[in-house]
Picture 1 (tube, chains in turn green, purple):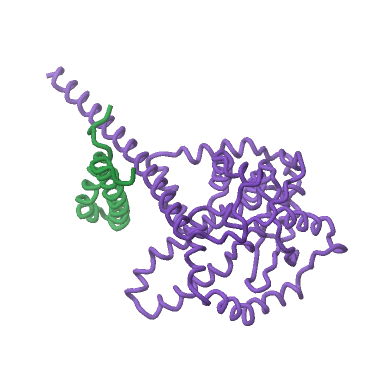
Picture 2 (cartoon, chains in turn blue, yellow; picture 1 turned 90 degrees about the vertical axis):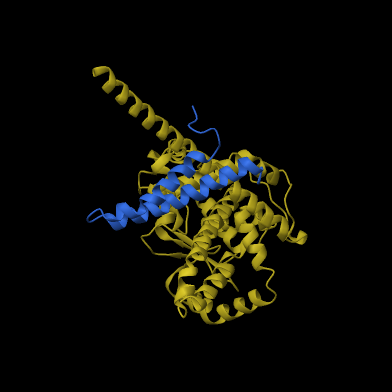
Length: 63
Length: 333
């Protein structure tokens, strides 16, 4: 079962959530810096990947 | 272990151009660099005089030059490989080194170096695959173009701090090209031997060959290992990607998988049957760039689609678990 019918929406959603969480996770003692870096990389991946799939499904680009 | 000798004699690929087997990304990069007029031949001369001669002299002094009377069987293998790929026989040196490795060095007068430990581990067919791989590097002139790009980056990056940061994506792109150049030359190794088992066994040996126990290696089990690695999803796929981006060489399991994909695509069979680019044809640069773009976009789309599916499944599991918990809590009240 698909949570959202549009391709890429789940990935984009998680990317945006991780992007928002970058700030709060930085305050975790000791590993905050590492968590923020990881969240940034994964958020970037989610936003770019999800955005790409979403755009592709909406516009037919690259098909 | 499988692949000790080819089943039939390999077909000679008369006048074959290296672009016939090059990976689209590698081919596009090489084609684009060859468009810079005069720069490549100038660099070839400069590095040839000041750098290459120096290295060649060291090998001449400290390594053994292979010839008809010195390691004649290895010389025969090199001659055979060069005949199949229809190219000149480069000088070949054997260096007493414990690290299992081989390399093609130089631009003006390139030569091949095999470390002695590599020869101890490889059978004749696998050794031919290694030689084919190195001859492939020479035919594609990888040394020249890699040096050219790294020089440009070295001169431009350190003097300007902001440029230094901006150059990171270019460095990553160069690593990606370097990995694809290795895949191109694995294909050259396969074409030189026309023995897929030997070409794959070579990677198994490079990954974990033990002296005296090579017969215990099983190429088909290594192929299964390669499939397992490629099927990784979710966070494992993320770690796999992060482990790969900074490397100049692809992991051996990836190289085996890429080789099999290339054979499955039918391109290998077409070349062996005689359908390939001739040296006189030249490189259709724009077509190569388009093909590289398509290849990159297809691979990126597949990674994104897999990730989207994984994230969707994870979210669904999370939602259903939360729902069960809420239902359980409300029924107990």
